[in-house]
Length: 95
Image 1 (cartoon, rainbow, N blue to C red):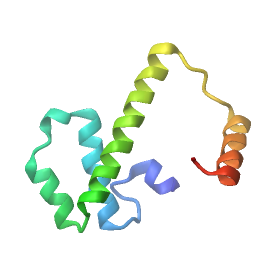
Image 2 (tube, rainbow, N blue to C red):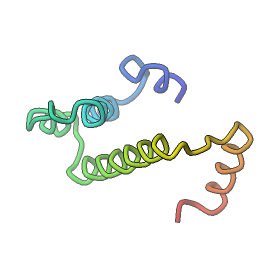
Image 3 (cartoon, one colour):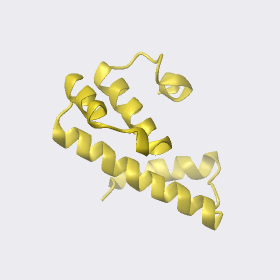
């Protein structure tokens, strides 16, 4: 995980994940540059329609959340707050 956060391009990850992260980076930073060729690259990497759609939905939601947090100056939890949230999610799940 640390290697991915440091640089997903050089991290020891599966080609499917690397392809998806590149696609999501473009979707986030320069969406107008996406083309059918980008989607075909995901298929060539072995990703399914469902995996692509799921990743795009998560990406879109996180982008909206990020922009709302910036616009409304949300407080960011400290390390203890994140740990508490992680414990809660591990015990109860996302649902």
